[in-house]
Image 1 (cartoon, one colour):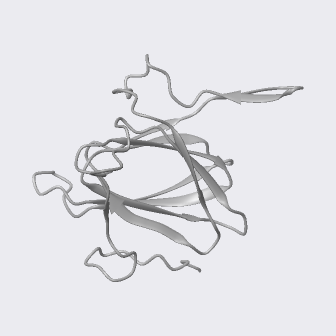
Image 2 (cartoon, rainbow, N blue to C red):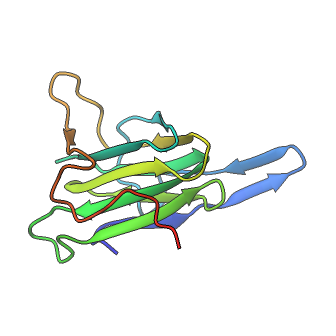
Length: 151
């Protein structure tokens, strides 16, 4: 696993009315600070990525659908520099995924439904100078192929 990346299995509490699932609490050891919360939706067969942050830590939660989330460690001083991690998270595998700064990431819906991803990053989005750097998902030097791996 890439150094500094954390996954935390989320507890689902079901009853006859539905279910409750805590995504982030300030008493979790993984909690750093609150910047904002937002929802992003990824359609089937679309890669949302690659991108990375220089300051911000992301905390991903898939609340609808299933996603393949892929990380690439770009940190030159990391013991896992150049490593790639793949996670399959969502409704059938609820988890929190903490992504440190300078770890490029992207996601893609697994299956035929859109994916609803909630992110609780540590920083507010700065409209004048965003801490968001994009890399083309296909034309880059990251050793990863987003195509479906069958067989």
